[in-house]
Image (cartoon, rainbow, N blue to C red; front, side, top):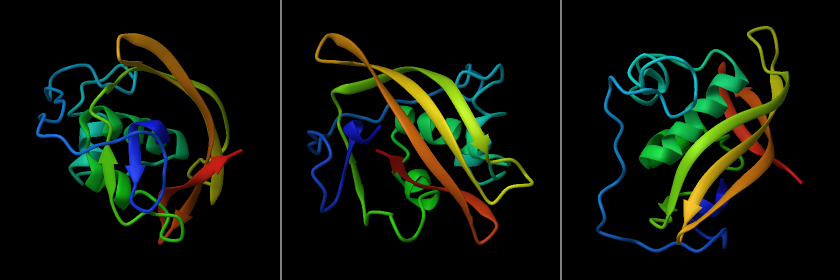
Length: 151
């Protein structure tokens, strides 16, 4: 999902600052991550700090939802300290439309690392497309964080 943001100091997709309001998800709406729960009871709990993601997959899902609602603070908070950019700018022309988890390894309460392979669908400039990525997650200070994408 690097194409939807530009990490400061990196050229990761076209991005520009805009006065357009960030997309919102109503607390009682279905969670954008695709689980059968409301946003408030699912990813919204992680975004607000009421809970922490218990697995690498749940962190991946919550990070996808953070891209949907443009929650840069959550994305930065859940990014490993050695790979985290100083700031993020969202591409206002990308609208995320769905998430599919393709595979996971490790990443449970009993692991210290794991991977999540996913496909995220999006619309941009009137076209639909998808991004597939194999993401690595590790524990940092006891919490799951995104480390990087495997090439």
